[in-house]
Image (tube, rainbow, N blue to C red; front, side, top):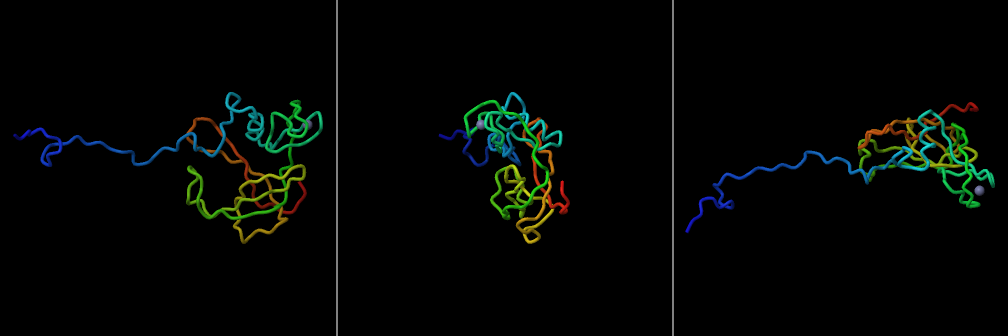
Length: 171
Ligand SMILES: [Zn+2]
């Protein structure tokens, strides 16, 4: 007995389904933190950065300066912290080049790029260095802060910091 509506029959008309031509970046794999007050307790850091100021927390109890910003002092466990300005110029303490294996959401066409540990004086922090290739740089080179806007899978206006080579002038 033959059922002419058998969907496995090669001649039967089949429903067509499609898959997306590109996959949207899942929010959980987003490299950058959400930056608003309802999402993070260090929102003031991002608010200041959006205004062009690199800041971090300093403990009013023991004077320790932290980076990244904290909500509790890792030195004395006090929670009386204030935001203080950091210098926008520093020196390359160490650097390397990223050639591949980027996290999702960071385009492979960006590679290679330079990441560095930058000595700002009060603290050292890591960040990307734009505007130079690995071979252009030496330990101790002066760099200055730049703030970039982040495009991402959220409507939030987000920012982050990077560095770029600077002339040797004092800040
Ligand atoms: Zn402290």
